[in-house]
Amino acid sequence: MFTVAEKAEQCNDNSATGAENQRLRRQRQVERIWRLGARVVFELIDELARHHDIADVDYRLTRYAALDPELLRAVGGDRFPHPPIHGVT
Image (cartoon, rainbow, N blue to C red; front, top):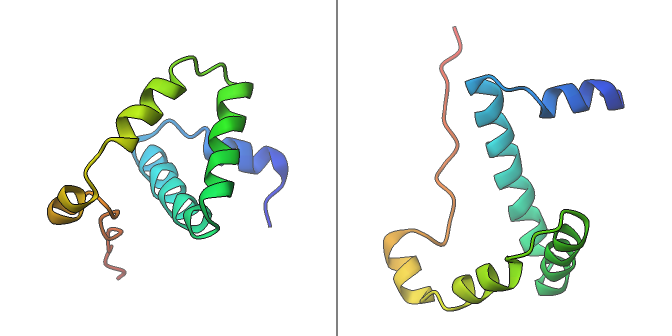
């Protein structure tokens, strides 16, 4: 179990490995949130827009909503890549 300070430090790691780890964690969290349904995704986006003053959120939502799901599926854009596997010696 991490303390709040340790967790904040972990999330603010600016090294390449730290940034990549944060990106992977974010991907897994998004997968879990997505499984909760459209309402939860909406609430998250709405909260981010309100608390972080994301002025162009509606423009971005319009662009993403216009994406062709069949095309995304065909090119693999509907799923995250598999996480990297590192050898342990």
